[in-house]
Amino acid sequence: MSPYLLFPCYLALALVPLGMTWYLGYPPRPFWDELSSAIALTGFAILLVEFVLSGRFRVISGRLGIDATMRFHQLAARPLTLLLLVHPFLYTMPFKPSLPWDATRQLTLDVEGWSLVSGLAAWVLLAVVVGAAMFRDQLPYRYEAWRVSHGIGAALIALFGAHHAMESGRYSDHPMFIGFWLAMVGLALSTLAMVYVGRPLLQLRHPYRVTSNRPIALKTRELVLEPARGRALDFDAGQFAWLTLDRSPFSIREHPFSICSAPCDTDRLVFVIKQAGDFTNRIGEVAIGAPAYLDGPHGGLVLTGRDSRGFVFIAGGVGVAPILSILRQLFVTNDPRPMKLFYGNRIREQMIYADELRVMSGVLDLESVHVLSEPPSGWTGEVGQIDSALIQRHCRRGEQSDWLYVICGPTAMINSVEDALTEIGVPAGQIVSEKFSYL
Image (cartoon, rainbow, N blue to C red; front, side, top):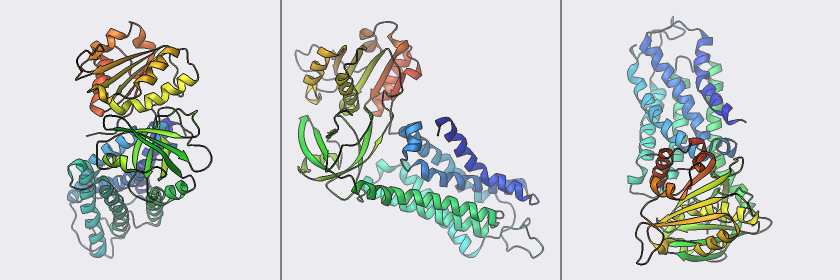
């Protein structure tokens, strides 16, 4: 499916409930009551579609970019939640049982008993689940615990919300609406089943094992995986995978890491991992021979489908990993196009694969520019941050318009570099990056 059709499909699903209310042709109620119902119907439909957006399905994320789909999922949840939380307070009609002569419930809001309980449960859970996601970094428990609670909470919101809609909604008790809600809730729950059960079952068919786990720089390790049988994962240079180490693929503990090896290296996969968190600080404890499972490939930080006269690669810290994958593939194919690599670190001891980059520079038309913010005595490279002035010192006039700029690193660094490139006149279409923090 074309990426240009994905948003219209999303919008169409969201508007189906409004179309069905128009088709039913019930007599109108006061404006605020109809507005409240419209918010609830459309909002609940969007909420159920969001399950699919968050499911890491490549048919969607592979076309839009997984960072774009996840960013949309996170940002759309905020106004959607606000509207759904506000909608009960917009009703003006009395909360009373429906009258015998009022077949379309034009005069009362028949919300009582279990439908009231399920609606209140969905309302409270929605506020808690979305609030916990927005402030996840400030919560006193690990990512894995948050992920489990997020999935369970989302499933309960879907079930309670559907019950409330079909039992107390003026429109949603119609068989046409009931069929729609059952199909949408089924789609949402099927997405969760695929994420937590289906994918792990598929991963069991393609296990890997750890064949190397060694330090290569300060608090940075190189992890090598080999498939237990057959070839390694097919991927495009620059992509990443979610990695589960030394445990069952049904474990909640999985984390995304960029693949550092080249796609032509079909016997193994190489990952570069910085020790900077609960999971990664213990990466050195993973033993040789430990099982590993992958969900991937994902990501759009690739050259595939992009034509360019030359390349500028800009990396911060271990953000050089996907760029090394790209460079290794270009090295194997002996690509003749000119390239520049700006590689920023805090100190020299954080630099990785410097010797390999020197070898590449002798074969490829590659200029490597190393940048340290805290250089040692005698350092002859660049000092400070990668900014517009530094880029302009090394890029000739004219390269801005027809070269491709590929950026990977911490989100703050990506934002800063994108601003710097815009400042020197690089068109937005020539900048490729992926971000996974959206606060």
